[in-house]
Length: 306
Image (tube, rainbow, N blue to C red; front, side, top):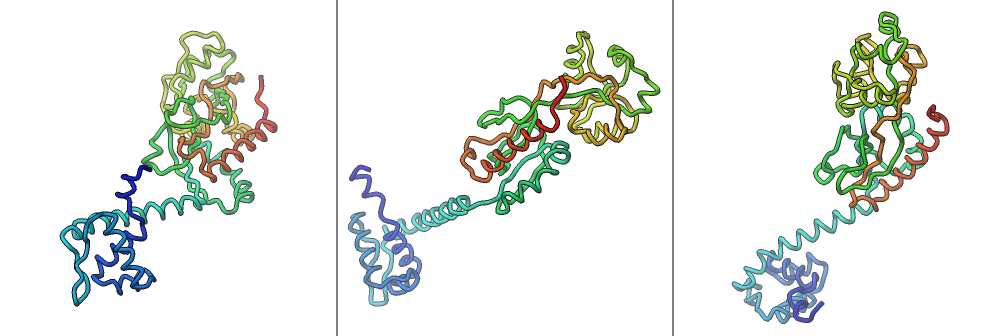
């Protein structure tokens, strides 16, 4: 730093001494507050006045009083020191912070992530997980969240998007619905109530196109969450394209059946997203590494068909 710039940046020791004397009106009282000797306080004030070239206090028989220049200086220095203390405490607390504030998708979080969380906690007992449900992109800066598990494309500005897994979908419905509306070929689905997910508006079009069927699309009821669309299927209201790994219990129990046994890789995929500012945040890094390992284990146990 240039010499002339140093003049305008007194030491924090001198500023703390000045702030204390200014508030208490006494060198001895300031010495008690800062656990210093009175001579040390006097020396710091003298150095500060010499550095600034301004007299800050008038010595009187009853103590010291601020000069006009000292009064102006004291107004800002107290606030500046308070800001420095606050920022220092925040940095110190973040350096030892063990919280991970994580946004999750409702159904993915309930069905896939939560059954695996006990394993994470067993490996990392000092990390505290705070979960928040979010769908779609949001502002990390204002939300206070450290990371998110989301679905879509890796186009979230200002973030690092770590690929987790693809999504494969299949049309499902209740056994009663299929019995009343038999399907022998995929074209049969075109005249049936096909549910749409708000986050995947072209899912049916993509599924039909994979079978070289033009013009296929949904157009039935529209849902925000998979949990609701699954309930609509269970109620026998229609057919939905659902990720197979999220409805394994319903398929295994026979509550849901495949309306037509053709799985298609979705245009969307799952990602672990962190803002660039949190790439070095230890709890997020630990969770990212653990999550990658769990995804690999999952693929080993449930390899997709085709």
